[in-house]
Image (cartoon, rainbow, N blue to C red):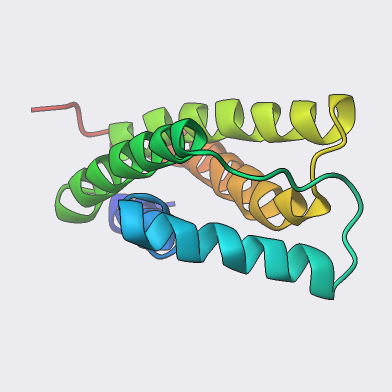
Length: 139
């Protein structure tokens, strides 16, 4: 894999993150996003529990969404290979947490819709980084 291709992968994963997390980063939009997840959970009869979100829960969702947006903008504007490697580690952590809560706490199966692409982006960026011939350092 060449450097340009890998940078496009890093940028594409960041664009995906903006699309998926934008609605979770802002107080007004988070309510709409959570309600949409409730609707998907109900309409498609996903297994597991979908709890009511209280203001403190929404705050932590906003915090996570805000951090992901900032990290995404960095990768869109500067899609350095090392950022793809770091992002793969973050995705593996997110994936592990999703899988843990899916299996240990029987949370809504809607989480599978987030888990699969999260893990896929992590795998692609992780292995893609090690196939690079020119790993540009952070400057």
